[in-house]
Length: 316
Image (tube, rainbow, N blue to C red; front, side, top):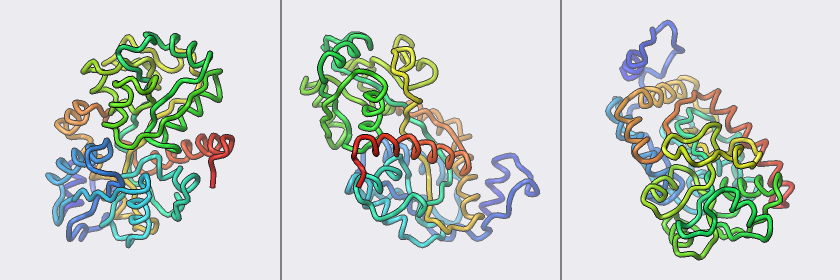
């Protein structure tokens, strides 16, 4: 059975593992991406599904795009789904902020974390022909007068990272919410904005292609692909590490054995070398954190962003 295959793949004895759902899955599992095709969540979900389907028996992982409302449509559908393991949410930080800022009817407690697969650090990016060649240039300019900054939307983790920066520095930003990464790139490269706050996974390809310049990255250590780009801390932006999280969640009430099976599946995917290579080549650092560790990430993010949202008067 599938659970035994997963246990073997992990190199763990049956005695060391909790009891798993012996008859799960018996059909295909929907992996709901609450955004349109082509974005970072869709891309990573399809990379995961490719490897997962070489492991799963009894059904396949099927990526289903249910975009709309900045993630609310797909997120709500999973929150209301049967807690049987056949509906998985590709969960991002917007699950935390949408109920606070956009009137989503679900609560974060309507979901049960399964596993974290990516932490995507925030970056400050500017056009290649920008007069800001260093982070200090950018900081000085944003301190003197507000800079126009492209973000994926008001209330996104990228907008909130900008608010976090404003809280601890004298910089000020005018935010330009722009749906779709392609449109955001056009706004920046076309000179319609001073810069952007983006996740590294999406910014990397643009930077490597010479379309934008990265000025700072929200990581504890410098990124090996961009060794000359300082961290936020090195640039004097003293905020906690700000990163978009991506993982799996299921409806609250999903049985422990099903959650364990899915978490083990994600770990097996992570341990596949070809998967890690595909993720890395796509600009995403693959990680694995189990349900408890993922819950800690979610709780920390909720605490930090809740304070920012309240202070900015953005709550509903």
